[in-house]
Image (cartoon, rainbow, N blue to C red; front, side):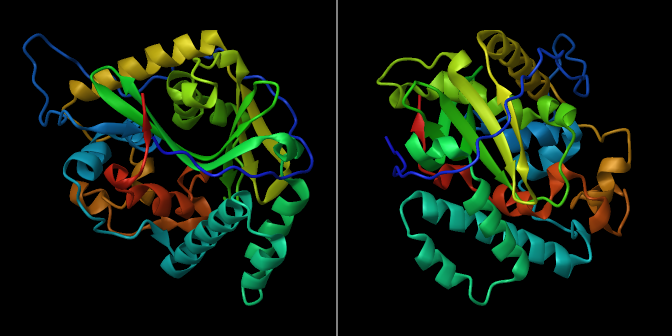
Length: 316
């Protein structure tokens, strides 16, 4: 069993919002006829993540190429590539700074690392110091924590930037974002990550609740944006949402199990897809300015190159 070190932090609390029980979003519907066999069955050891589930919703073929065929990227994601790589690197550096602060490194020490850093990174860092959630000052903190929970015949993994356990028994999942755009709240509510993370914590978080299962009503998820430090988005969980998400995720896995992994009908997702040349959907990358917030370059570093089997995790 692996746990992250604990520490404390402080400042302005986020505004509280509530996630309505929205209907299950329509993934690409695939026929599972009697006797039908998928083109490539999932290996028994396959582990889902919010990224792989999101990829299947976006394009089943992308899911196959990335997670089953495990192909390397044949094309750049966006143009200009130098700027995209710069933003991805800054996002990585910011997450590393915050993680080091949360495990106890002094601000003065971390400031010393920023002497030659880009202005954008220094601005994000100062925004974090001034506007990080105030409740972190009294919480037990577990940065960079990975949990694993069963999902049908497989497992689903969730990697939290931060799990904060409050003295009153509340559990905050905080995700640090460095994207230049902030998605609409309605989009965040439908996002697979907003469903997977609280669900996995409710399923697998007993070790952080004195061995007792966590009540879904005690779980909150916060997206904190370095570019918009005063505009965090908080989603409160509930037993009803837990049941909804369990049904949604179970149905999504069933679709994947029975999928022939067709191309998505719309060509729009192909503009920023690194596999577009495999599908004859174009050779040129889409512009960085048109990259959707949920597909910022920072995500590429965190997800596309990630070998989940190498991550220490807590399994339940």
